[in-house]
Amino acid sequence: MDKLSYSLGVTVGANLKQQEFKLENVDDFISGLRNVIENKKLEIDEKEVNEIVNEYFKEIQEKVANQQAEIQANFFAENGKKEDIITTESGLQYKVIKEGEGAMPAAEDNVSVHYHGTLLDGKVFDSSVDRGEPVTFPVNGVIKGWQEAIQLMKEGGKLLIFVPSELAYGAQGAGNVIPPHTPLAFEVELIKIIKE
Image (cartoon, rainbow, N blue to C red; front, side, top):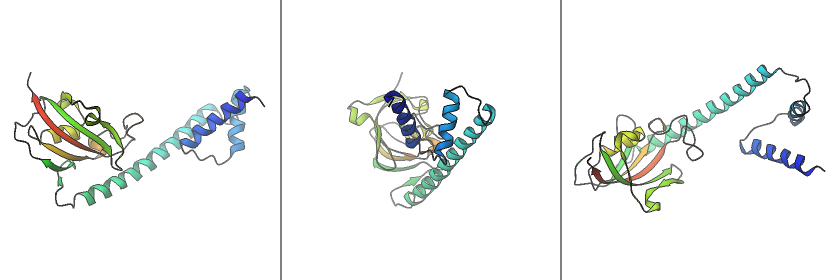
C-alpha cells in the first residue's frame, strides 16, 4: 500500500463526509478523480463540471437557508409570546434584565459594554464576560441588531437580546463560528458612554 495515496484518499473522503456530501456513485467519483490526476480526457467538459457543482452548492445553500428561516420564524414567534419579551418593529426581541439610570447612547457614540453571545442552542461563540474585559466600540460600527439594542439602553442597564439573522450576519455568517442565516442571543450590559 502507498500509505500517502491512501491517506490523501481518506482525507478527501473525510472532508466530503464532514460537509455532508451525498455521493450517489463512488465509482464515478473515483473515475473523475483518476481522470484529473492521470491527465486523461474528462468525460464531462470542464464548463459543465463547474455548472453542475455550482448548482449543487446553490441547492444546498437554499435548503439550509429555508431550514434556518423556519427555525428562526418558529423561535421568534414562540419567544415573542413570553410576557417579559418585547419585540421591536425590526423583529429584534429583548428582555430587560436591569434598567439603567444613566444617559442613552446615540448611533455616533462610543460605548463600553460587557456581553455574552450564544447561538439559540446555548453554544457560546464570543464573550467579553468570559475574557474578563469589557469592549469599546462605536454604536454604528456593529451589527444592526446591536445598534438598535444599545440605543434602547441607559448606562448601567442590561438586556437579553435575540437578534434575527438579517439583523446579524445574514447569509454570509461569520467565519466558522456563526453559520449563515443564524439568529443570535446576547446578554449585553451598557457600562458607559464614552464621549470624545
